[in-house]
Length: 154
Image 1 (cartoon, one colour):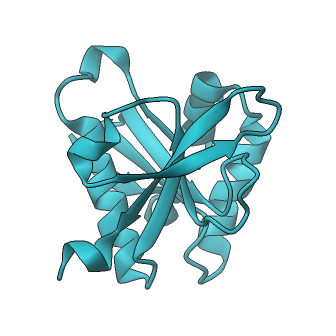
Image 2: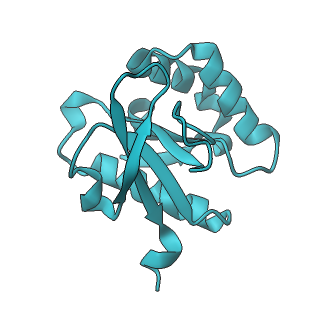
């Protein structure tokens, strides 16, 4: 298994956008646009990452300004984290999270956020519960987590 940044592997943009679309239901075009934005400029956000075995995508995640929640001040957000079911419980999600945090830290972004309904999963990987937030079109509140790479290196 290898983790790649789509910005460095533009040949993955179409299949990456299709893969994320199939997992999360957001339009393929929206993913393609965000992925193209990641390599059309020198900005750090957005970024997209996939875990691959050969050319098969087995997991992935992105970094966007806001992952569809009301706390626009808590940014950027890791989003769309997903690992194919047959590859779960192998530490791939943790490797993706660590890779993304390290990569973003190298680009000058030490603090990242993510929104989830999971409890206890992200704590295993150095994330801390921060607060509850309201997701767009959600009646229930979701958990917001924070990860600070500079705090991890102290």
